[in-house]
Amino acid sequence: MGAIRALITAVVVAGAVFVPTLGSDPAPEDVTTEVLSTQAVSTEAADTPAATEPDPAVEPGLSDDPATDAEPALSDLELLVYQRTIELGRASPGVTVSVTVSHAGEVVSVAGTVPFDPASTAKLYWLAAAVDGAGVDAVTPFAEAIFASSDNQAASQVIDLVGIDAINDFTAAAGMGDTYLSLWIDGGIRRAGVEAAEREFRNTSTTADAVAFLDRLADHELLDLADSAQVMAWMTFAPDRSNDPDEWGAILTERLPPDVAALTMHKAGWLPPGCCVALDSSLSAVGLVPLPDGSRFAIAVATVDGDDFEGQASWISQLTAEIYDLLATPPT
Image 1 (cartoon, rainbow, N blue to C red):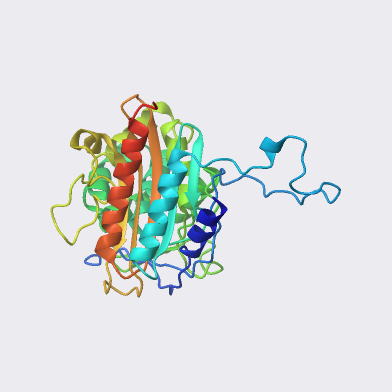
Image 2: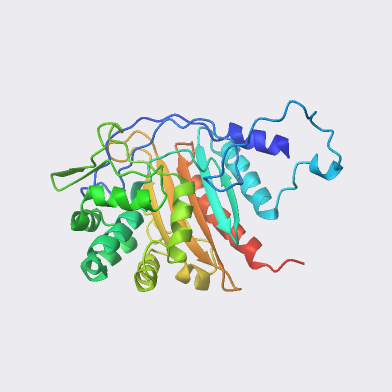
Protein backbone atom coordinates (compact mmCIF):
# COMPACT_ATOMS: atom_id res chain seq x y z
CA MET A 1 0.00 0.00 0.00
CA GLY A 2 2.85 2.37 0.73
CA ALA A 3 4.12 1.66 -2.78
CA ILE A 4 0.76 2.69 -4.24
CA ARG A 5 0.88 6.00 -2.39
CA ALA A 6 4.45 6.66 -3.53
CA LEU A 7 3.60 5.88 -7.14
CA ILE A 8 0.60 8.21 -7.12
CA THR A 9 2.75 10.99 -5.72
CA ALA A 10 5.06 10.59 -8.71
CA VAL A 11 2.28 11.17 -11.25
CA VAL A 12 0.94 14.46 -9.87
CA VAL A 13 3.83 16.73 -10.87
CA ALA A 14 3.71 19.15 -13.81
CA GLY A 15 4.82 22.65 -14.82
CA ALA A 16 2.80 25.38 -16.49
CA VAL A 17 2.78 29.10 -17.19
CA PHE A 18 0.32 31.70 -15.92
CA VAL A 19 -1.64 34.07 -18.13
CA PRO A 20 -4.69 36.17 -17.14
CA THR A 21 -8.10 34.54 -17.41
CA LEU A 22 -10.33 36.29 -19.92
CA GLY A 23 -14.09 36.19 -20.07
CA SER A 24 -14.79 37.65 -23.49
CA ASP A 25 -16.18 35.60 -26.35
CA PRO A 26 -15.20 33.95 -28.65
CA ALA A 27 -12.59 32.54 -26.27
CA PRO A 28 -14.77 29.85 -24.62
CA GLU A 29 -12.64 28.72 -21.73
CA ASP A 30 -9.56 30.81 -21.00
CA VAL A 31 -7.80 29.43 -17.99
CA THR A 32 -4.57 29.87 -16.13
CA THR A 33 -2.49 27.13 -14.60
CA GLU A 34 0.54 27.11 -12.36
CA VAL A 35 3.52 25.00 -11.54
CA LEU A 36 2.14 22.18 -9.44
CA SER A 37 4.35 20.60 -6.86
CA THR A 38 4.45 17.01 -5.73
CA GLN A 39 1.56 16.31 -3.39
CA ALA A 40 1.32 13.17 -1.30
CA VAL A 41 -1.91 11.22 -1.38
CA SER A 42 -4.32 12.11 1.39
CA THR A 43 -7.48 10.36 2.49
CA GLU A 44 -8.17 12.83 5.26
CA ALA A 45 -10.32 15.93 5.20
CA ALA A 46 -8.53 18.98 3.83
CA ASP A 47 -8.25 20.63 7.25
CA THR A 48 -6.86 17.59 9.06
CA PRO A 49 -3.83 18.68 11.10
CA ALA A 50 -0.49 17.25 10.13
CA ALA A 51 0.70 14.27 12.13
CA THR A 52 2.78 15.12 15.17
CA GLU A 53 6.38 14.01 15.53
CA PRO A 54 6.72 10.48 16.93
CA ASP A 55 7.57 10.12 20.57
CA PRO A 56 11.30 9.29 20.69
CA ALA A 57 10.68 7.15 23.74
CA VAL A 58 8.51 4.79 21.72
CA GLU A 59 10.29 2.54 19.25
CA PRO A 60 8.38 2.20 15.98
CA GLY A 61 6.81 -1.16 15.30
CA LEU A 62 6.90 -2.29 18.93
CA SER A 63 3.44 -1.46 20.23
CA ASP A 64 1.62 -3.87 22.49
CA ASP A 65 -1.18 -4.27 19.98
CA PRO A 66 0.12 -5.71 16.68
CA ALA A 67 -2.99 -4.43 14.93
CA THR A 68 -1.90 -0.84 15.51
CA ASP A 69 1.40 -1.43 13.71
CA ALA A 70 -0.22 -2.26 10.36
CA GLU A 71 -1.19 0.50 7.96
CA PRO A 72 -5.00 0.58 7.57
CA ALA A 73 -6.32 -1.32 4.57
CA LEU A 74 -7.37 0.78 1.61
CA SER A 75 -11.10 1.05 0.99
CA ASP A 76 -12.56 0.02 -2.36
CA LEU A 77 -13.04 3.71 -3.20
CA GLU A 78 -9.42 4.52 -2.40
CA LEU A 79 -8.16 1.62 -4.49
CA LEU A 80 -10.26 2.66 -7.47
CA VAL A 81 -9.21 6.32 -7.39
CA TYR A 82 -5.53 5.55 -6.80
CA GLN A 83 -5.29 2.90 -9.49
CA ARG A 84 -7.08 4.99 -12.12
CA THR A 85 -4.89 8.00 -11.34
CA ILE A 86 -1.75 5.93 -11.83
CA GLU A 87 -3.11 4.63 -15.14
CA LEU A 88 -3.79 8.15 -16.42
CA GLY A 89 -0.29 9.25 -15.48
CA ARG A 90 1.14 6.40 -17.55
CA ALA A 91 -1.20 6.96 -20.49
CA SER A 92 -0.78 10.75 -20.76
CA PRO A 93 2.82 11.73 -19.98
CA GLY A 94 3.22 15.18 -18.46
CA VAL A 95 -0.30 15.30 -17.06
CA THR A 96 -1.00 16.82 -13.65
CA VAL A 97 -3.93 15.12 -11.91
CA SER A 98 -5.99 16.22 -8.93
CA VAL A 99 -9.00 14.26 -7.68
CA THR A 100 -11.15 14.54 -4.56
CA VAL A 101 -14.22 12.39 -3.85
CA SER A 102 -16.46 12.32 -0.80
CA HIS A 103 -19.17 9.84 0.12
CA ALA A 104 -20.84 9.08 3.44
CA GLY A 105 -18.10 10.75 5.45
CA GLU A 106 -15.20 9.22 3.53
CA VAL A 107 -12.93 11.61 1.63
CA VAL A 108 -10.43 10.25 -0.90
CA SER A 109 -8.01 12.73 -2.41
CA VAL A 110 -5.07 12.66 -4.80
CA ALA A 111 -3.27 16.04 -4.81
CA GLY A 112 -6.47 17.57 -3.50
CA THR A 113 -4.80 20.64 -2.02
CA VAL A 114 -2.62 21.45 -5.05
CA PRO A 115 -3.87 24.75 -6.56
CA PHE A 116 -4.86 25.00 -10.21
CA ASP A 117 -6.89 27.49 -12.22
CA PRO A 118 -10.48 26.23 -12.02
CA ALA A 119 -11.52 27.75 -15.37
CA SER A 120 -15.30 27.77 -15.77
CA THR A 121 -15.97 25.33 -12.96
CA ALA A 122 -15.62 28.42 -10.72
CA LYS A 123 -18.72 29.94 -12.33
CA LEU A 124 -20.66 27.74 -9.92
CA TYR A 125 -19.06 29.53 -6.96
CA TRP A 126 -19.66 32.95 -8.50
CA LEU A 127 -23.31 32.13 -9.08
CA ALA A 128 -23.80 30.89 -5.51
CA ALA A 129 -22.14 34.04 -4.17
CA ALA A 130 -24.47 36.16 -6.28
CA VAL A 131 -27.50 34.28 -4.97
CA ASP A 132 -26.24 34.91 -1.45
CA GLY A 133 -25.71 38.62 -2.08
CA ALA A 134 -28.35 39.58 -4.63
CA GLY A 135 -31.00 36.87 -4.43
CA VAL A 136 -32.37 34.19 -6.72
CA ASP A 137 -34.49 36.54 -8.82
CA ALA A 138 -31.47 38.64 -9.80
CA VAL A 139 -29.45 35.59 -10.83
CA THR A 140 -32.20 33.67 -12.65
CA PRO A 141 -31.79 35.42 -16.06
CA PHE A 142 -28.18 34.21 -16.29
CA ALA A 143 -28.25 30.78 -14.64
CA GLU A 144 -29.26 28.57 -17.55
CA ALA A 145 -26.66 30.07 -19.91
CA ILE A 146 -23.91 29.62 -17.32
CA PHE A 147 -24.57 25.91 -16.92
CA ALA A 148 -25.94 24.95 -20.34
CA SER A 149 -23.22 26.63 -22.42
CA SER A 150 -20.75 28.03 -19.88
CA ASP A 151 -21.54 31.49 -21.25
CA ASN A 152 -18.85 34.03 -20.34
CA GLN A 153 -21.05 37.08 -20.73
CA ALA A 154 -23.65 35.62 -18.36
CA ALA A 155 -20.88 34.89 -15.88
CA SER A 156 -19.70 38.51 -16.14
CA GLN A 157 -23.19 39.78 -15.37
CA VAL A 158 -23.41 37.50 -12.34
CA ILE A 159 -20.06 38.79 -11.05
CA ASP A 160 -21.29 42.35 -11.49
CA LEU A 161 -24.40 41.70 -9.38
CA VAL A 162 -22.25 41.61 -6.24
CA GLY A 163 -18.69 42.47 -7.27
CA ILE A 164 -15.57 40.37 -7.44
CA ASP A 165 -14.55 41.05 -3.83
CA ALA A 166 -17.92 39.85 -2.52
CA ILE A 167 -17.40 36.61 -4.41
CA ASN A 168 -14.01 36.13 -2.76
CA ASP A 169 -15.51 36.94 0.63
CA PHE A 170 -18.16 34.28 0.02
CA THR A 171 -15.71 31.53 -0.93
CA ALA A 172 -13.47 32.45 2.01
CA ALA A 173 -16.43 32.24 4.40
CA ALA A 174 -17.27 28.87 2.85
CA GLY A 175 -13.89 27.59 4.02
CA MET A 176 -12.36 27.53 0.53
CA GLY A 177 -8.97 28.81 1.59
CA ASP A 178 -7.24 28.05 -1.72
CA THR A 179 -9.95 29.50 -3.96
CA TYR A 180 -9.64 33.07 -5.25
CA LEU A 181 -10.89 35.00 -8.28
CA SER A 182 -8.16 37.51 -9.10
CA LEU A 183 -9.03 38.64 -12.61
CA TRP A 184 -11.92 38.42 -15.05
CA ILE A 185 -12.10 40.40 -18.31
CA ASP A 186 -15.14 40.65 -20.55
CA GLY A 187 -16.19 43.23 -23.12
CA GLY A 188 -13.24 45.45 -22.32
CA ILE A 189 -14.19 45.55 -18.65
CA ARG A 190 -11.48 44.39 -16.28
CA ARG A 191 -12.51 43.10 -12.88
CA ALA A 192 -9.75 42.54 -10.34
CA GLY A 193 -9.92 41.33 -6.75
CA VAL A 194 -8.42 43.42 -3.98
CA GLU A 195 -5.61 40.86 -3.58
CA ALA A 196 -5.12 40.31 -7.32
CA ALA A 197 -1.73 41.95 -7.62
CA GLU A 198 -0.20 40.16 -4.66
CA ARG A 199 -1.59 36.90 -6.05
CA GLU A 200 0.02 37.72 -9.42
CA PHE A 201 -3.45 37.85 -11.00
CA ARG A 202 -3.82 34.11 -10.59
CA ASN A 203 -7.23 32.49 -10.32
CA THR A 204 -6.93 29.43 -8.12
CA SER A 205 -8.87 26.63 -6.50
CA THR A 206 -8.34 23.01 -5.47
CA THR A 207 -10.37 19.85 -5.81
CA ALA A 208 -10.51 19.66 -2.01
CA ASP A 209 -12.09 23.13 -1.90
CA ALA A 210 -14.53 22.13 -4.64
CA VAL A 211 -15.74 19.02 -2.84
CA ALA A 212 -16.05 20.88 0.46
CA PHE A 213 -18.18 23.48 -1.36
CA LEU A 214 -20.38 20.82 -2.97
CA ASP A 215 -20.96 18.99 0.30
CA ARG A 216 -21.81 22.20 2.15
CA LEU A 217 -24.12 23.31 -0.67
CA ALA A 218 -25.98 19.99 -0.60
CA ASP A 219 -26.24 20.17 3.19
CA HIS A 220 -27.69 23.73 2.97
CA GLU A 221 -24.82 25.18 4.98
CA LEU A 222 -23.90 27.92 2.47
CA LEU A 223 -27.38 29.09 1.49
CA ASP A 224 -30.82 28.54 2.95
CA LEU A 225 -32.86 25.50 1.92
CA ALA A 226 -34.76 27.13 -0.95
CA ASP A 227 -31.72 28.91 -2.39
CA SER A 228 -29.57 25.77 -2.15
CA ALA A 229 -32.24 23.76 -3.94
CA GLN A 230 -32.45 26.35 -6.70
CA VAL A 231 -28.68 26.43 -7.29
CA MET A 232 -28.57 22.62 -7.45
CA ALA A 233 -31.53 22.60 -9.86
CA TRP A 234 -29.67 25.04 -12.12
CA MET A 235 -26.64 22.74 -12.05
CA THR A 236 -28.69 20.06 -13.83
CA PHE A 237 -28.83 22.37 -16.88
CA ALA A 238 -25.24 21.38 -17.65
CA PRO A 239 -25.12 19.07 -20.69
CA ASP A 240 -25.25 15.34 -20.00
CA ARG A 241 -23.87 14.15 -23.34
CA SER A 242 -21.47 15.75 -25.82
CA ASN A 243 -23.12 16.85 -29.05
CA ASP A 244 -20.08 18.79 -30.28
CA PRO A 245 -16.56 17.31 -30.30
CA ASP A 246 -15.15 20.75 -29.40
CA GLU A 247 -17.33 21.12 -26.31
CA TRP A 248 -16.51 19.46 -23.02
CA GLY A 249 -19.35 20.41 -20.69
CA ALA A 250 -20.48 16.80 -20.26
CA ILE A 251 -17.16 15.23 -19.29
CA LEU A 252 -18.43 14.30 -15.82
CA THR A 253 -21.69 12.67 -16.95
CA GLU A 254 -20.86 11.23 -20.38
CA ARG A 255 -20.76 7.61 -19.20
CA LEU A 256 -23.26 7.69 -16.37
CA PRO A 257 -26.62 5.94 -16.90
CA PRO A 258 -28.91 8.45 -18.66
CA ASP A 259 -31.36 8.70 -15.77
CA VAL A 260 -28.50 9.36 -13.35
CA ALA A 261 -26.83 11.87 -15.66
CA ALA A 262 -30.08 13.82 -15.92
CA LEU A 263 -30.12 14.32 -12.15
CA THR A 264 -26.39 14.96 -11.72
CA MET A 265 -25.52 18.52 -10.68
CA HIS A 266 -22.26 19.53 -12.32
CA LYS A 267 -20.05 22.13 -14.02
CA ALA A 268 -17.00 21.69 -16.24
CA GLY A 269 -14.19 23.91 -17.43
CA TRP A 270 -11.88 23.30 -20.38
CA LEU A 271 -9.04 24.74 -22.43
CA PRO A 272 -8.08 22.54 -25.41
CA PRO A 273 -4.46 22.54 -26.59
CA GLY A 274 -3.63 25.64 -28.61
CA CYS A 275 -6.75 27.49 -27.55
CA CYS A 276 -6.74 31.22 -26.95
CA VAL A 277 -3.89 32.90 -25.13
CA ALA A 278 -2.96 30.25 -22.57
CA LEU A 279 -0.11 27.85 -23.16
CA ASP A 280 -1.41 24.94 -21.13
CA SER A 281 -4.37 22.69 -21.79
CA SER A 282 -6.73 22.05 -18.91
CA LEU A 283 -9.83 20.05 -18.07
CA SER A 284 -11.76 20.23 -14.80
CA ALA A 285 -15.18 19.17 -13.58
CA VAL A 286 -17.10 19.22 -10.31
CA GLY A 287 -20.39 17.61 -9.42
CA LEU A 288 -22.87 15.93 -7.11
CA VAL A 289 -23.91 12.49 -8.38
CA PRO A 290 -27.07 10.85 -6.95
CA LEU A 291 -27.03 7.22 -5.86
CA PRO A 292 -29.91 4.70 -5.82
CA ASP A 293 -30.15 4.68 -2.02
CA GLY A 294 -30.90 8.41 -1.92
CA SER A 295 -27.38 9.46 -0.98
CA ARG A 296 -24.88 11.08 -3.34
CA PHE A 297 -21.18 11.50 -3.84
CA ALA A 298 -19.29 14.70 -4.54
CA ILE A 299 -16.43 14.68 -7.00
CA ALA A 300 -13.94 17.21 -8.33
CA VAL A 301 -11.33 16.35 -10.96
CA ALA A 302 -8.69 18.41 -12.74
CA THR A 303 -6.11 17.47 -15.36
CA VAL A 304 -3.52 19.96 -16.63
CA ASP A 305 -1.27 19.48 -19.65
CA GLY A 306 -0.63 15.89 -20.70
CA ASP A 307 -0.17 14.39 -24.14
CA ASP A 308 -3.74 13.21 -24.69
CA PHE A 309 -6.45 15.84 -24.08
CA GLU A 310 -9.29 13.73 -25.46
CA GLY A 311 -8.04 10.73 -23.51
CA GLN A 312 -8.01 12.79 -20.32
CA ALA A 313 -11.60 13.84 -20.97
CA SER A 314 -12.56 10.21 -21.47
CA TRP A 315 -10.71 9.29 -18.27
CA ILE A 316 -12.74 11.79 -16.23
CA SER A 317 -15.97 10.36 -17.66
CA GLN A 318 -14.89 6.77 -17.02
CA LEU A 319 -13.65 7.46 -13.49
CA THR A 320 -16.95 9.09 -12.54
CA ALA A 321 -18.93 6.18 -14.00
CA GLU A 322 -16.77 3.61 -12.18
CA ILE A 323 -17.17 5.44 -8.88
CA TYR A 324 -20.93 5.48 -9.44
CA ASP A 325 -20.99 1.73 -10.20
CA LEU A 326 -18.91 1.00 -7.09
CA LEU A 327 -21.02 3.09 -4.72
CA ALA A 328 -24.35 2.11 -6.28
CA THR A 329 -23.66 -1.60 -5.78
CA PRO A 330 -24.78 -2.84 -2.35
CA PRO A 331 -21.92 -4.42 -0.38
CA THR A 332 -21.97 -8.20 -0.32
